[in-house]
Amino acid sequence: MKLQVYRAATALGGPLIRLYLARRRARGKEDAARFGERLGHPGRPRPPGPLVWLHGASVGESLSLLPLVQRLRRDLPGAAALVTTGTVTSARLMAERLPEGAFHQYVPVDRAAWVRTFLDHWRPDLILWSESEFWPNLLCEPAARGIPMVLVNGRVSDRALATWRRHRGLIRHLLAGFALCLGQSPRDAERLRELGAPRVDCLGNLKQAAAPLPVDAADLAALDAALDGRPRWLAASTHAGEEALAGRVHRALAGRHPGLLTIVVPRHPDRGAAVAADLRRQGLAVARRGAGEAPAVDTDVLLADTLGELGLFYRLGGVAFVGKSLLAEGGQNPLEPAQLGCAVLYGPHMGNFTDTVAGLEAAGAAQAVADEAALAAAVDRLLADPAERARRAAAGAAFATARSAVLDDVMAALEPFLAPLRAAAPEPTRAGA
Image (cartoon, rainbow, N blue to C red; front, side, top):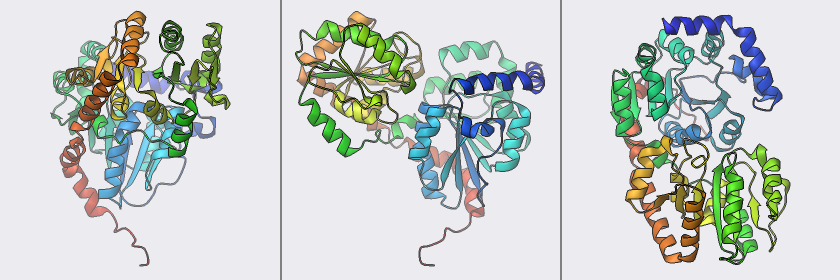
């Protein structure tokens, strides 16, 4: 009944949905040049041959899909890979990082007519859905067409579990459309079973198969030379309020660590001007990378309000606090700094990465901090103890790479769904043929 009500509401609510999207576009939350894609209209022709559609909601989910996309392109070169996301930032990252033969489109908003338009054009042969984007129309329409769907790296957070327990009939119907659900942890797999998924397995977290975040070697060398050995720490993927908190930590520690530089990387770079203003009101000297400002010897905070450079700053930071974990909830991916030589810190609100942080802490690679004072104390200790910092960094790197074989396991589980595509795919053209 709830499903019918939802589908009717989204069918009849077209004008209101368009108004909502127009307001988002006016605020820069939608891509004006490609806005039609959000209404299901394709931005390019469909390539010939089999097509695999992979969907990840935003930056984190789409990045976790990249190793899978790359393997699909290697093992099924005759099949195209369509990757959809719903945010402007993720679209930019996918444009930079998708391999040849894979391309990005915005996912249509969850209205049946727009989803049908999308499916009519792209005609996917297999759908790989990532993590926890359980939109009714986006799942029901492919299921009605008999398109095989697999949930990869499935995740059910505490909050999502509580919500879906109140709507058991709806989530059971949605999960029934998946031929296979792969939970990213045993806890997620068990929750998927509880919510009604008919076939569930757990092979590990695809985030552990991801390559380290990329870096421009020349930029890394130049910035490292410019910082000239200064003590430094990094507040990464921060959300509102966490940047000002990082500024206060800097002020508390600057007297104990002469030359201290705090690097702040906001999760949303478009907040850069406002964040810089907040930090300057604390009396801090800020160099804003997004405005082309280079750090000087008296710079307190390097504000990295740019896109796609987190790999650069993790390599420079040494000590990394992962944002969305002190003043917001859910956290960001702690494996990324662990892969790149950082001692990792985060707040108590890492609900999206419960099993990952448990593993990192058990390995002695990471530490949870309860509040601002605890963060300052932890950064202070790590800056004062290079040996402990190096020990934690080594433990984190070992943990982050320990389950890199998860990609092989996932590909093996997908083989029954890939085999028909392999048989139907044209032979790739050989150079000189």
